[in-house]
View 1 (tube, rainbow, N blue to C red):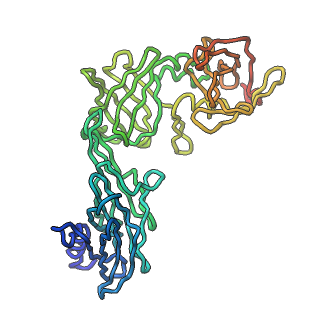
View 2: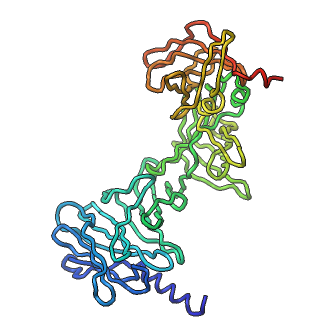
View 3: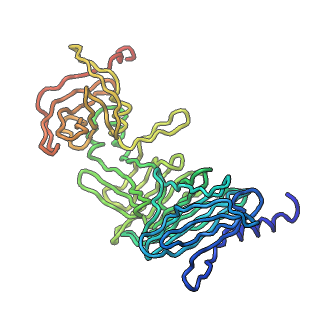
Length: 429
């Protein structure tokens, strides 16, 4: 880099993110203009937004005054003449993007534009999947966050009160050539200064209960024992630890999160409300999956917990629940009885679902009759017809059941049939 280039870059950066001033601002601006190198060809273009009745039009002119682009489809609120503002953000080494804001009352409409090949093109701004709505009344503000030698980040922010405290969101969108895309890694959400993590949704079980799952035998302890999950709502503003067992559920809002010292990845959380406090030490695998937790100060829920994780080829496979692991890892395959009655089970679409014959069923630990381990409930609704009692990795007893009209209060309704995995005898020791 040549000497003297740094001050020039800093000057351009400061100018690039200065909002446009309105023309005739005192009397209600009929137009605003902004001059930058919008096209990226090294020159400077002036883009003017002009109000025509209740509509807004854009026009770009080069340094000589020649028109080099126009657009008439700027989003505006309905009703009377809108307020008008513009700001710009650098594309990177050359060129700039333009944001046009129109407002009336509490409604604000935003659009992002790029001047390219003699045309003003609107760039869609995508959230998780769908483009953002043109207008909103949610109290959002917007700005460009400069990043030298990289495309500027387009940021939308808001702060509002929620049940758990003051909730602040900062959503970052990055330039992708023909669109702006949400970047979850650079976005943030926090409640009273406590960041809501982007952990994978999973249930952690008391470690002693996981022994039955590993042996594929006796899951009653897992079904009725304590479990831990985290309510992470980065849209609605929630960060809570939820502990539950057969006796009920306790919800503890997280009020503090301190990262571990050293190389280990995880957090020590302070959680509770109304005088009830607990400490939860969470180890996070890969930075995204709660792997183990130690709970203290939560009464009967104190103890060690673990999620169901499999390591495959240096990758982490995280199961949302024990039911999902059973549906994906244990049940799929070909099974047969001593009378050669065959049963083919395959993974199905949906959480903890398998295909049984011509229908999909959901694996459910809760409500399994005494002496069985899990229910197979129709995914389309209705009462379960079968329960399974696991007998190791390669066998189970299928038991007919009768349940109440709401699918609860299930009871065994006859003798069961033993199914063995086809081919398992070849692998027996």
